[in-house]
Image 1 (tube, helix red, strand yellow):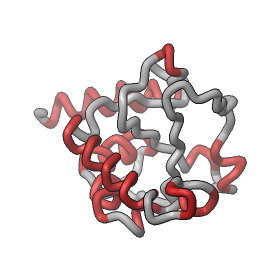
Image 2 (cartoon, rainbow, N blue to C red):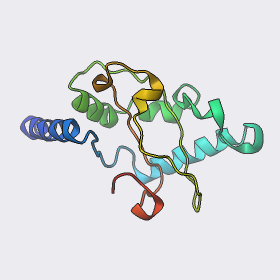
Image 3 (spheres, one colour):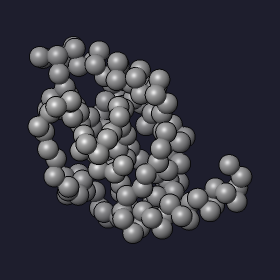
Image 4 (spheres, rainbow, N blue to C red):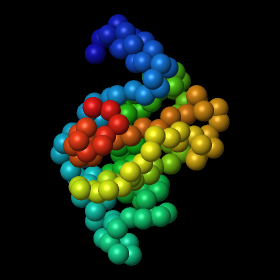
Length: 144
């Protein structure tokens, strides 16, 4: 990207984020990286009671798995977060794993994450969602 193209993209994304407020960034990780992340998470899950991540074992995986930490610190993700917030000063407060398995009847109603995380001011925080497998409208994804 040229500096001018980056500035134009920044202003466009910033305007979209302020209005929606959500921002879609495609391809933070490649399909191969996503598959590796899923394998690492599955391997970690196998060490947990019942072989699944539930309760507190779903949180702060960036502190336990180097592959998750690498994604959280990736320049592509950080660039999108910095642009959305309008600052270079960013902090990863937490990472959470929310898995919706095939044919699952699990449902998460739309909500404000800041309500649960108590992050204030709310417009100074955001949640970055990263799909590691196909996220289709038929599967219940938020944004296609």
